Image 1 (cartoon, rainbow, N blue to C red):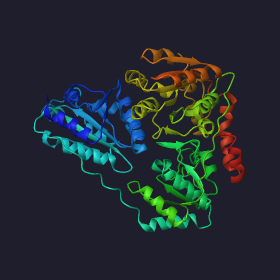
Image 2 (image 1 turned 180 degrees about the vertical axis):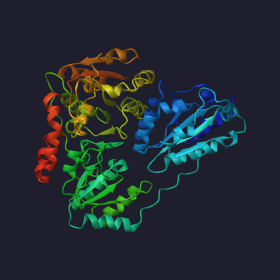
Image 3 (image 1 turned 90 degrees about the horizontal axis):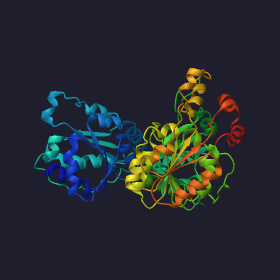
Image 4 (image 1 turned 30 degrees about the vertical axis):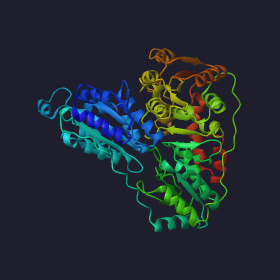
Length: 551
């Protein structure tokens, strides 16, 4: 048995890495063989590298520590790149181990030879090629330390086959992690001054600030100072629901987000970035804040956010301020024909305790925040980097990280087809994931965006690029072909029954929810005009109207 690969596995396990999502090839066979020597390492086989990288992201979001991936050469890394992009935007700790040809083989430019460093650099905050067996375990510990630096990043270690099979490696134990640097007093005083200046202020929460205990402290500060409490559009992980402070998430549509931000004079960022439009639109500003709004960040990404917020609360005398909490409320079960709104309503009615909700529903999930606001406390994971195909892998990783919690993934039909192989891994691992595929037979978001960018309504050839109904996709047969029990629902009653059934039974399940397009016909044509008119209304009136347009 190769000493270097064995020592690497032991080093990773000693450092707390207990899961590796794999899609190996020939260059990684010594790592694969070494798995038998390290029972603490769980290897989860995936059929596509985008599943491996997305699952490692979901694991990290829920456990707060890195999982590893094992990828095959530059091509395998390239296949996983989209979900590594999402992981980078989520700022999670993640360790890629990418196998490569033996160093003596590189000169032959064989078919799978590629420039792995160039592929890895776009998503990796730390990157190294290990060049000797003796240094391999030290390289691995440095990669893990880099991945775990607050708030988290992707670290990629390239492992040539001859380094993996070589001799002379010794397992190493990690050094204690260094504490994150403290925010200086001037920054805390400046934040307190902004919130106490008598101007209209808001706290924008992202990343670590959307989870306890920072979330509770921020809510007390907002309540004490009269500031509004806002959340970023696509949180990596947000704790929400009954008994937790309610946070108003900014809308994806920039026209709505600018209305939410209208009138804000001071914006304090807590692990968030200044809000800007997701895309550029002709004649519309990218920055969403009103003119004259002052922006400051309480802490930089690598600094100790919790400590800074604690000190800010003390400075403002807000530690004991009343904590606003979301009341318990559930919508009634819907009836009649099924649509996206009723899917979200049924989920709000049936959501179990301690659920993990993965939202990649695109346009079909617009009402999800409103209908689940008062449901039992749960975690929400969203599409941080905008690269679709994340939902099913993210759910797999979250379920591996938290096997005692139900995971519900809401996924659009187009997004589900990027990484359907995740269903096979769910069945193989026996994880309790309920995948709800909202099948509206279209890329509905692109129908809307066609108009928002000023390209018109599109003719027959343009509309063909958004049509997923010719031929229709059969997600029930697709799931059953990979070992996942599945049902199709076309009425609200059928969907509620299928969801109850899936939540009550262990293992993975898929529900294909057949729904009409979220934006169709006359409503689709009118929505851009409505958004433009809303943007022009006075702030108070616009906010009142907005509540009837989007959650």
